[in-house]
Length: 131
Image (cartoon, helix red, strand yellow):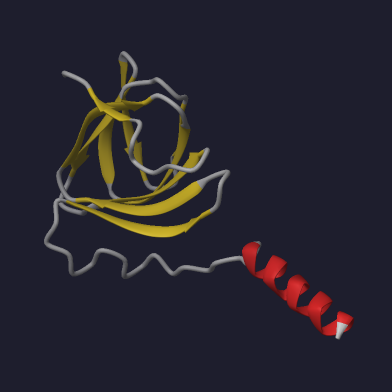
């Protein structure tokens, strides 16, 4: 009986650290939303999302967490603090907590990114700013 309990506990603990594999090719393909957010995975330390931006994301900041963006498809103009950057497929952007940021999609193709936010992001610390 003790062995069964140990195996059950081990299986449970392993499931908490399970890896998730996502194919991002079709995420957001049929959405009509201006911004489509697909949750990939989360734990107490971080949250991961695939985000499809068909127009723009308003200027905002996060008080309690940082964010790392990897551009999968498309192009855009990103405001990060007081600077503006042209971003494209393959770019990686680190956004420290408290830094204002926004993005405007450029070109015909939607901007698709992976956003990793740490610690866990529940949306409560997003503060919209004026442009």
